[in-house]
Image (cartoon, rainbow, N blue to C red; front, side):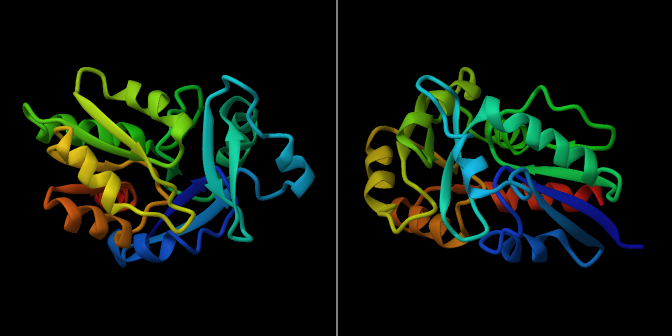
Length: 218
């Protein structure tokens, strides 16, 4: 029997940049249904979700391939609406974002990548320091807070543009990083390999670790 998992992005579906890498890890016993919080919105409506000063900011991908900055507070009602719809057709779901969404309500198992990443890092880091790579400069302080007492050094590199991953990764290693996390579901296997090759350190890719956990639940 094939289990169906909902993949709920905070941007628009389908995520052709992401799901082809996740599908093999989910295994043949799993199929998935993609939806996006912004799927039913026009370009103008999406513009109204832009963050104001001091709002928690996330970034995601649109169907066109463009990236967009989003206010968490403005985004949440649309994310909840899509979750409500997809739960009617799946056994479990994944919020395809490493941000924090504790106010979401759900009736079926729902995987939060930020919680999975935090638990994995805490289990393996020991006395080390986390090298954190996030998409936006303004997210560094926001996303560092979730790691609690884990020592963190961070850099911002967008997964949605041509960018240098090697230099920031090497700099974080000089600052003491002993393990890396690419803290966004938009980062790819190629991005992971760049960081790993540049530093020689273990590197955790959000999308792959989440897909493996989801497969265990199928």
